[in-house]
Image: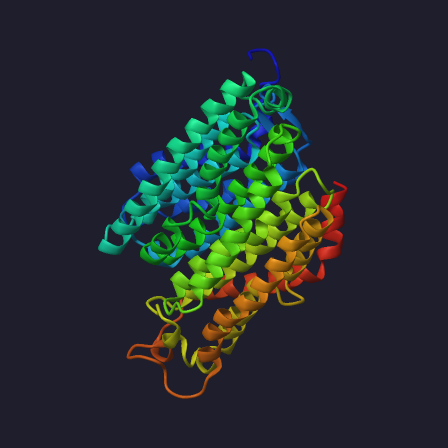
Length: 471
């Protein structure tokens, strides 16, 4: 591939993040252990510069077509790097003075770098490499605290990831055998003439690996334990950044590699979508731990986000619906976790009793984010769900849109179960409850900004969707 289009500027956001991660490792070796915040600051600068580069970069293939710079990649870059900025901000207070603060910031950057490569991969080998780069630092982050809960979270996360990673590699082998190539254009032309059974098995196996990163069925088993056992900023990261990249990669796989291959793509993804939204909602109904509730909530959100993925190639609404919904979900989900970070140590719904009396603004931000996850107007997720449902109907999957609407109504139950204690009068739930808690100010400000951003994006949804439809 030498002499083709190997221009590093095509990967400028990724190059900036990689340089920041390597520079952060070197810088962390020289900084005093109690004062390693410049490493996180360097990561924030790289993420901000990457967002600007992603917004201004012209579309086109890169590195012989192995990496695609297009609307899906650009939007994913902006959302992933924005999510990284938020998580680094949420980690300021919990990691202040930590002897491994530089390692933590570098791990976040490396996992985000893997997510960026995952979103733009147009070659199965690059997809596999990006999967590993996005996964390995995440396993370390899940167990970063080295406590019992974190160690268990990291182990379960790793075991499921290793298993489905092997399945994914097996799927890549099957697709190579069926199409005699791994580049998406080669797959698009080669799969229709190959064995349909081999192609279908390969697509299912590769999709299983991507669904692990997204946290959807059948790769969802790690989500509740990893989210409950890891630190709150890490849980916010794991339920947002890898999910955005994996869904973008899955969308690209369906749009550029599987189209016309005789694989029942719509049926496969529709079944996974239905299972994810239903299982996530049912499991969340009676959760008392707020992190496990958000974990099952994120599984159900995968089901809704898969609606436009299922109808890729069937309707022009699929791409703008997915990209807008990804941005809306990331903003709203990070806002909910920011509230969790703002009142550390409050693990159950009952311990949020009295939050509205003590901190009305924080309780309001929580209500906006939780109702936003339901899809309440005028939040951004409301418009995201409307566009996703419309894409499903336009793509011939009206039954899936109806099921998604029913699940949306049902999800209101467990979100209201969390909101109700915050506005209830009376004493705080438990000893050391929210009434006596000291807010973490940076996290609280992040929650306010995310809640306001969710509403603002919902109100400005028309122009944003028009931009996504006509870049």
